[in-house]
Length: 285
Image 1 (cartoon, rainbow, N blue to C red):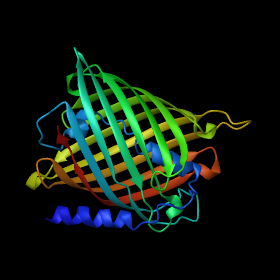
Image 2: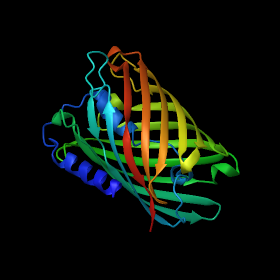
Image 3: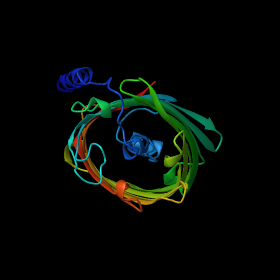
């Protein structure tokens, strides 16, 4: 009943938020919305928290309510506030002999109650092919993902990203390493970039079926030249999560996330702290 009440409260929170104002998203905010859906965790790692019999189809809702220290991702004069950012992903796994194809479709909303002009929504599709599971050794993978972003609740179209990733995953029990090269193009040339990234995560079981996960990311980003300017960034992230089981298929997830972007351009030197709970689930179909 507690989980149901939380779902109901979050739904009412979203519907009462101002989602129809004209967008005022800055370039760092547009990147943030795409970056938070470019998570290169493996399908096995994402599903590891749930005691669900593997099936070809799955649906995975994720419903966070976060406090963000820097809503506009500004380099100074920071303004904090709440962000309600629910999403749902429909997935399908296809066996291709020794390889596997993973396909996903997702819809998401980012509602900022204190500033409707910063609210947005969108969708993405993803196709990934991988040669083996990371626990069997170094596992190469490649993926393609288009993502479209809209004003408010699927209002006017803002832009579309096209992302191609090639990477290598390896796991040692509860520890996971991911190295990847990514190219992203968009309908806004200033955001076109190539990056080299690394991600390291570790999960530790605690008492009462609790699981603690810690993760560190680093990305070296090189943007396409705009006139005489070529932007270069170093993005760093440290995230801790506590998974509290609600059922075999659902968790309450408590997150603390620190993100820092160092840039050759002053307007993109940002720091953000994200803290909040989320309801997370995965159901086999």
